[in-house]
Image (cartoon, rainbow, N blue to C red; front, top):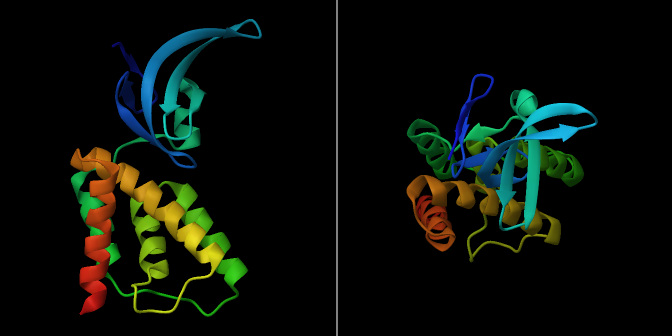
Length: 172
């Protein structure tokens, strides 16, 4: 496992990171590759769930928004966001859906928690539309994968933790 100094961030092979548009991945290597006659230092990130590997030039890491797993304060704020009251704006669904997608792809756990909070429906409330359900599940999946690494637990345990927070607060 080699440690390389990157612009403002240091990543280690074997460390989990968050790529905003793809979620949690694991740094498998930091290597040099010769591309079009230029030697570039690359961070190689594997996303096992999607069976995908990204090669990110280290010079571009700050531009793509790659970050470490959220810290305690950020996760606590995300959990508190989940406990809050849903804020449904009275605009067309297509516009809201676009805003939700942008929040999910921001990679920010607090923004993702807002999407989950706003789209959460308990069993006794009316059904969600197909597109609402898809966006909701994408947001839960994205946040749960980060919570599982943060809390050192399985994805199922992270999903249960999120669901417990949502159902306790909404049942009151």
